[in-house]
Length: 148
Image (cartoon, rainbow, N blue to C red):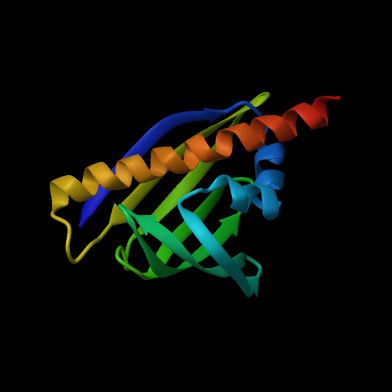
């Protein structure tokens, strides 16, 4: 188990646009190239929580996983991997409005039965950075359409 802190990423969009993107479905799902075949099941409405079942690419292999995501707009989203190679991992994204931009900080505890702690910390940090990097263009594009 390792604790990962990834702070200071900034979306070029106000926080309401970021949340519109997150809940937008298609464009958001398509942005993540390491995930495929996602299926969403609503668990609760308030707070909104979903189960997200998909395949995720770990290295060169696709593995099935189930994730519970609980949303607390506009402040945070909490994710917990229930099944898959990193089952038991939990992390949160915290969204801080900064005018026309939104800061995203991530904090989490990552677990793996087969990966040693130092390597797991590097992989988890890389995973969080990649999630942001894949979302940034879609968030930016949505913000541009809102400014018109």
